[in-house]
Length: 81
Image (cartoon, rainbow, N blue to C red; front, top):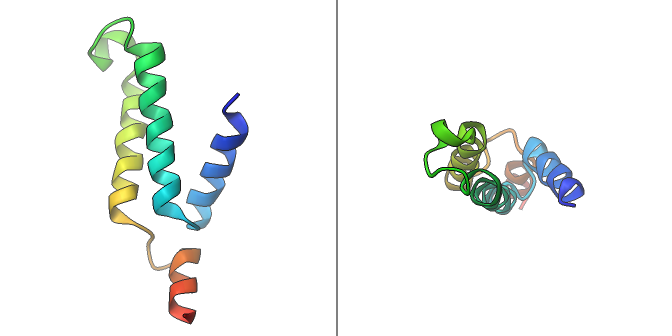
């Protein structure tokens, strides 16, 4: 159901185009996935098998805060403007 949207978000993050909004939405998807699938079993990631999705959520939140790097498409657009 969310596969095509996750594919588009992943491509945007790899290219560095709209990276902050894409990373924020991806972190939201990871948080929802954790609470819907893993959080119902146990609260702690090590006990419910959700350590990888929790890690991805925090990585995407870091990418949201850090923003695009100098080699991204966002940076190239900003340099031309």
